[in-house]
Length: 350
Image (cartoon, rainbow, N blue to C red; front, side):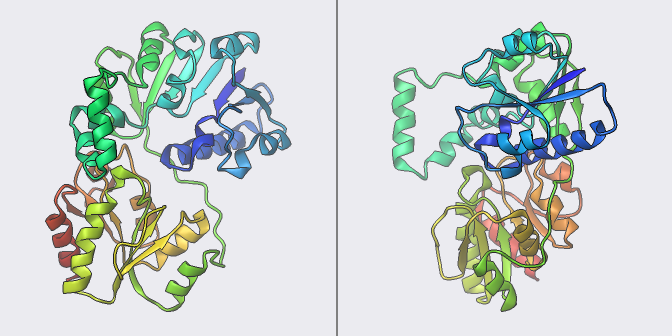
């Protein structure tokens, strides 16, 4: 048996879906180590030109003794035919649906749909709501709509065709919320959707802290709350920072909010950090007074699980999959109202 495994998804950036694929890849490697009748082939795409995970670069994969196939400029269906692939694993549906002729696949396909965020927030007009923060992007959106360039075309079109054309397609998603979301927004898909929650991420923990700013904060035993990926719109950093500023001014001047991601400092008690290594992130969790997880949308959401594993409390949005994943292990608020985020911070601290 030959398995063509998607590592293309891991090339663009570091994120939840990418961590999922990386974890599955290593777990599969471990399972196959004792089996000689299965060949694992890694699919990459040199047109992306990025390897955020150094251990998943072409060179690293080849050093493991695993064959790589570059899909750049090639038809996926032809590669599958020529290489006599039995099973294709697609780690992120949107990534492959927009790049390759997946609708022509006839072999067994295991396809992971983490969420259909694009469809969700377009239909709910959340994308318009978010882009009101940036006048130029908002104006660009209006121009595209007037010119008829902003049609409701999604990256899932070829995936839908693949499901309808290939009875050997198994769909996997990471929460019941995402399962019903797929069922609602893509009703033509009749394949059974399997819900398998995201696996624990593969993390190497080091005693030393690489980021000097984080190390100083921890050494000084400052009180801080952690907020991750502040540069991503859907994580809702702007409203959270507004709420935290008022909270720190009125209730606790010694409390700081640490954000990761490229965003500028908004007020005195806001400390900006770059994206942290996985080891540093664990240190950041362990020494924080809480994780603030105020996303507008999550298909699953690993950070709250990781924070709880480190014994850290979580203040979280009450929308999409988040209550399903966290149950009663978080203090909830509405992410759409700054006053409710503020209320959660004050109530949580009390």
